[in-house]
Length: 284
Image 1: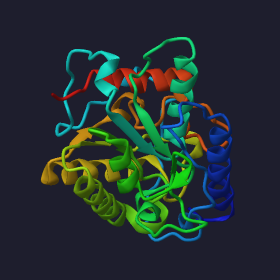
Image 2 (image 1 turned 90 degrees about the horizontal axis):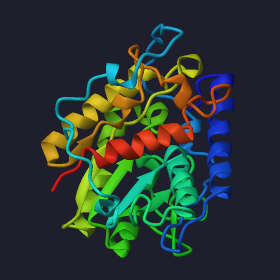
Image 3 (image 1 turned 90 degrees about the vertical axis):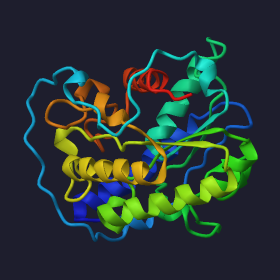
Image 4 (image 1 turned 120 degrees about the vertical axis):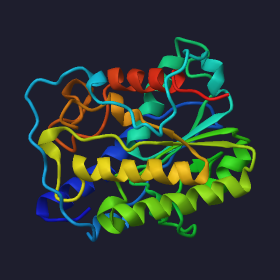
């Protein structure tokens, strides 16, 4: 996401954030994540700029942002065991969720079920489609780097939750990022035909840290097209971003753990909101 000198610095900071998150990762040996070298998205920008919107200084309740009408709707809260056969795929935002879950499991047996994680700093759907290599951005599973579709199949996951996009927009634009996600999901479905695929909306940034391309209007437009793609292909769209935004579409400040840096990563409180949303938006 190299838009100018500041954006380049932030792009490198995203890698650092992923590395820092990785250093705190725990969990069983079935749940491994990897940090990665800087994404090629840090090298160029092709999507058009969208101006940041002005936001109020006081964040209203998260419920002020409605869910996408094509998203999985609210349901009775499921037991954590619902996630026993789930895997969560994502970038450094998902690494934060993994860290939170790992810490909670030390004192709460069965927290978040037996859900596993495949997450890597700087990962996007675009670089996840690339061949394996020493510098490729693919998460580890049981100590080995592999393609996402192969890792999901090896895990035997029946529910696949994926959140990617923040590292794609600068390089591929909105349409290209959605196309890459569609290709990645098709590969996962081919290797795991019985798995349900849940595409999570890319979550917002706090108002002050939006960039030329990585900004909330672009993220919202990307999410809307993800929802359309899911509807067309029979995937489940999970609108996590709807409970993370204030009324102006920005990340709620109390949910942001890095307000003076990237402004995109979550606090523990936000991670719990995320988990509660997942467990109250389920399918049979």
